[in-house]
Amino acid sequence: MTRSNDSRRARWSSIWIGSALLCAVVLVAGAPSVHARRSAREAPAERTWWAFQQRAFPLGYIPDGAQMRAMRQASDTRAARSSAAATTAAVDSDRWINIGPAPILGIVRPAWSGRVRSIAVDPGDDSHWLIGAAQGGVWETRDSGATWIPKTDDQASLAIGAIAFAPSDARIIYVGTGEPGWFNLAYAGQGILKSTDGGSTWELLGNATFAHTSVSDVAVDPTNPGIVVASTTVGAAGRYATVFPHGLPAAPPRGVFKSVDGGATWSQRLNGDATSVEVDRANFARMTGTRRRSFWSGAKKSRAQSRPRFAAATRRSARRVGSGSR
Image (cartoon, rainbow, N blue to C red; front, side, top):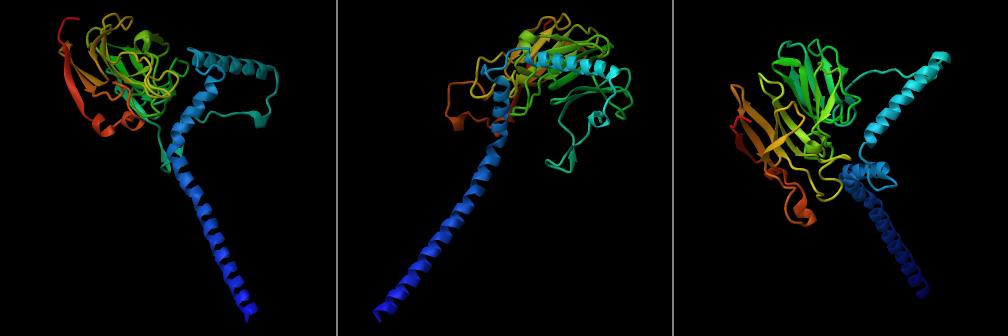
């Protein structure tokens, strides 16, 4: 009898231990799904920081001009390969074919385009357009969008926020760099690109004024292409970001700026993150800037308090910038 009871207790102990182990296995198996959800939520910021660290090693920061030096090195490498190919037969399997711009596949939708931040139409030719991509530079079409060619691949910044033709001379084009997006994929720019030959060549202007910010709008005087106004806001990503990777460094001023010498020098007319600027076409000296209520400035806050509050960010205030002759 005692032996039977002992055997029964042993069986029940085995069943209990087995059940406990099974529950433990189930709990452990369920843990990765929680971690996976957390990783998926944090992945974009972690990828951004990882990408920055790869480019910053071993200095801990990316030196000014590194992007342009890399682009020149890549251009020199392509030129050297082209020269070598002229005397050496190419291997078919080593050939690369440029397929041009194409939709992005398999991320969110079956097919979608990248972000286009600005579209400008030639005032004298409505089939001639320029578009500015979030991180793809300026593209041009002369047949109402049937075919496109890139115009700024070799420039200091491919993040585009605004484009404007000069109404009195469409050969003069102003392009504000930096995407005004307020999120971790919106890259800051390096200034305003200007072309006086329809986009064949470019000059970078206002680097000291606009670097580390994003140009959200550009307007050109209808009768004088040398008078330009531009609005700027925060640049949130990239080497030239206003805010990256944590906290707020010494940020450049942002707001509405005006130039009366073709972009060589700029004076600030409105302070604060400006999303756009509207001008009176009959009197270009009269303009109105749309200003975003900034959440980047202020005293140090807790992590939760310092996050951008997008509901509050949608509140904007309009202010007349000025009505003087300059």
